[in-house]
Length: 276
Image 1 (tube, rainbow, N blue to C red):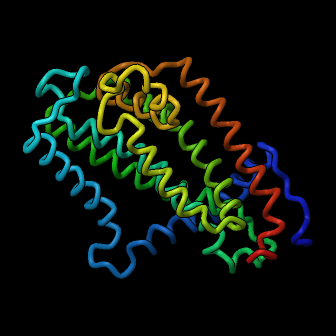
Image 2: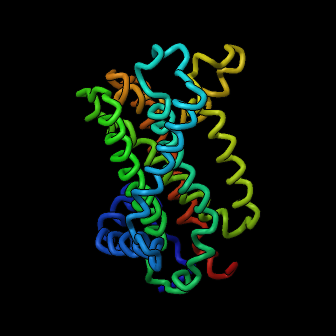
């Protein structure tokens, strides 16, 4: 096989690659999750204890020490601020973990790049899969906390996978794009970390959108995380149905981003071995 041959880059080729390599993706996901906690005393249990500890810290600081409430959204004491905060951080965590690691994804897999028969495109899928695993763990912790604090579970909670799917697709596309660009632009990793931090504070994680002055609120809405964070809270905490029109638009944009990221990755991968 010619390492410089053009690789298929259509949406159909993308789904076909994921489906045909699903067993390999699953094996690499298991190895990645196990390897992350290998050698530690608690092992994979850390994936549960870490978000549990963070939720406990948020609860103590914001609910006990600062006695913070979600201004303009809920009345005092009705919904614990830590639950609302944690739901936003889970969404940002899914996004930031992938894009922060993406620029070094190929750089840390040089041995696989040299194997011309290895489907390099699945490395981004593996990363997304591992991140979704940690997202699920975080959600389980969140559900347990909601039970503990006596919050109601609404039927709209079943919309949660539908709400999160477009963000997962968009993140996958960005991961492919940044992984390819990171091979040629070694400073990209540092830039992405800064951007990820900026997006954290320009999204409604620590504050409601209603608290943002109207003249700069457009900056918050331009953040791709804002809509998903709002929709996650709507179906999970407020018991509201998703904003279907917005979700459709977001889904279409996500399909374009995932195709574009895959296209760039497939188009540039022929030069990976030369650069590395």
